[in-house]
Length: 455
Image 1 (tube, rainbow, N blue to C red):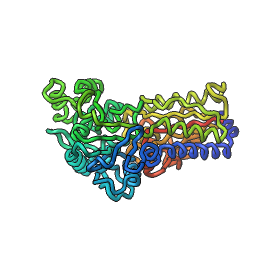
Image 2 (cartoon, rainbow, N blue to C red; image 1 turned 120 degrees about the vertical axis):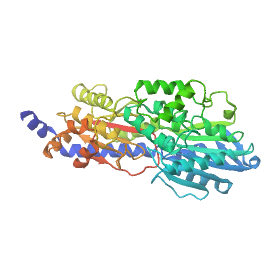
Image 3 (cartoon, helix red, strand yellow; image 1 turned 90 degrees about the vertical axis):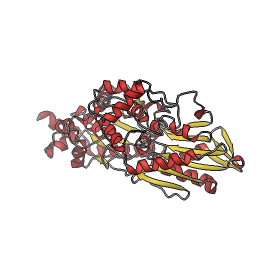
Image 4 (cartoon, rainbow, N blue to C red; image 1 turned 180 degrees about the vertical axis):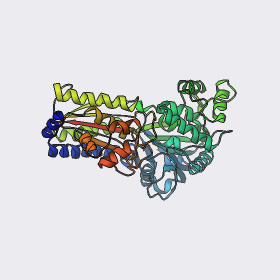
């Protein structure tokens, strides 16, 4: 009891409140830096009859038609920006977005669909996209708008598979703790458009793919499972992933049969480097996690925090990454290393949660709960973690925030943080404390942003 009394006496409630406000302001600055329409306009412009996309020029007088297709949580504002630039020069288009992630469009058809588990709307929209690009000819331009969430939103199943097969496979992969690279390797080989197959379908048209990266390392062929990018993964990789997580018996039989058939050479591989489909394809990343973190750093420094960017490439088990951040916060408090107080530690990336319980939450909420346990008994620390897309797992929260008072307040409400963590029930823990971060759909998606403040 004596230790708890000392803790209560040394915590400055007004200081904690200010730090929490600072963390929110830093997070929102990170969001603003990767706003999709702004990113589109940085890379695309019209100069007379010339369409400039990065360092490449497309002469609009030589183009018969311009199609706009795509998928992802940020595709709607991306499409709105393209419409603003090209206007009536757009012939037609279709994009698939997550329910609620919309924008007002005039020339491009918008289809709301299921994410992270795909649904029939996603399949119908993907078929429309496939039909559209197949109609494109040599003098046509296909602009493809891709962002995080695109894999689930382009769920048209390969021959011999059903949507239910893909839904069940997605659930198994999410639950086993597979990384996004591993999940997408399998998705590509169960699809008609992923893994470069959309580019192949659009051949011989010119293709420009504009991407918001939501994958660690910004690997082009992993973002939305790379529908316009040469696929570096193989059926053998898929077999290795299945064996690694021992999920063969959990997956639909038709999925396992297809991967085994591909592994033995009975089904053609996805398009690889050197395929003619990519000769007229331009793939560009227009916004990524590091840009969000860099903007957050600038905001933190304006608030007079000494700031350290750890990495934009964190992967691995969420709880392990949380303990690392908690340990760094404690080190700053005790020794002033690796950065003196007042300190702001920033990181990004995308961790994974191995589901062991039956609670509700997401990787950001679980990160904050695990970190809150790790910093218990230490003064003046605030930790915020949230998804830049505004949704964390199957919840309406983007993430959560915790501070040096979190476990004290939880005790007053008879909440056992370790029990909630073991049940993967971080949502209900933070809901009871009113510590969930809710932004609603942000219409962008560049993975997660984590903020640790120490004073």
